[in-house]
Image 1 (tube, rainbow, N blue to C red):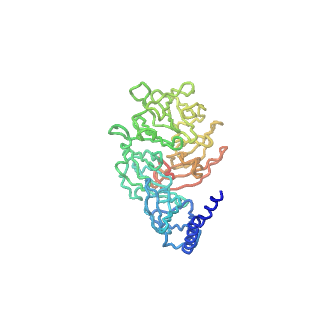
Image 2: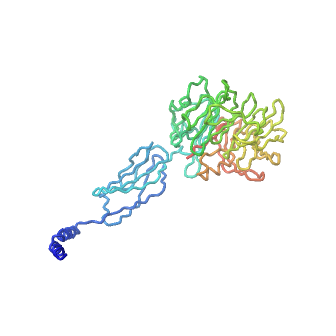
Image 3: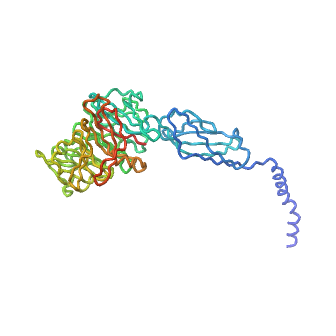
Length: 491
């Protein structure tokens, strides 16, 4: 034991030598050592700039140590465009004219220490807005041709743009008789947005940011299989199924075509076909939808029919739901909660009826409309908030209370005629309070037949009070043509 201890004592200086040498080396290096300089980057959550204006962003940088010489770092500002990063600037602060297309972008800011290679990153969102970034699209009849106008939302208020295609230098040729303007994303991710124009010239999309035209935007490029040479759809409807997946139903010449991102992302062959039948039934142009279901009407059999996007055939509404049959369909629409409304007429008689039901579900209400001159009604809309039926005859607007079974005159435009009524369905109303509020407001389009075509129309928006109160006008504009359709370019 003693010899072992003696041996270790003799070796101790040798064991301590590396420690002494390391201690001396470390001490010597203290005179050249620099503490690691951490950087904290602060950006706002979102920045908005108009297209071609200058974007100025000055990030707040906090350094944990001295020596924050800007030349010691490399900087990078980038955005994601179609999944790829595009460099905007390599300066500490962003100060550039914005020329990327209008839209919403993820903004990334990076700082790299040139000496150590260490990197810091912060993320935000950049909204690039244009004169046609968001707002109501108004399709007019001007001397038998289509003209698209816009109420463009700019800095919290609407600016009226007459002939927005001309304003945007769009190459779309003049379109014939107007049928409909319809807006909805047509991709699961929402990065492909559809603005569809339906007219006597056919159906086409326009670029959702510039409103320009390309021949590949024609509807024929979105349809599976061949189409007849006279293919001119007159109606398009759809929604965001499960709030994420766009589905649409297109009507042309008594046939209905379905588009679904759950399938091939193309409009299918006609789906107004009963299972086991070879020939399609003749469908009405009124089609309503909610999530993955649609309701159509068989014009010849005079009955309601349902269709699900997972099928290529349609099914008559089951008898146990109690839906009426044998009537002529006058009108049908749906609201944002999945409720359907239809106006029916006795075949060969003068009685009209109001039907309320859940889409692809049970009937909730079916009663005769107790108004003697209802046959003069031309346009219809149902309040999604209160369930009142609004209808127009000439320049008069009425509100029909289904509970009281009474009608009340709400507007009298004397020399004008009402050409359009609707409660617009905003697809992003669940995430946008303004959209949710506007979804309950009545849009009224009217025109003066004696006025100059193209400037004789007006558009008004009304708030609907409860208990049959008088309409409250929220906004109004003049200088339109005869309004036939209104949609909203959402963000």
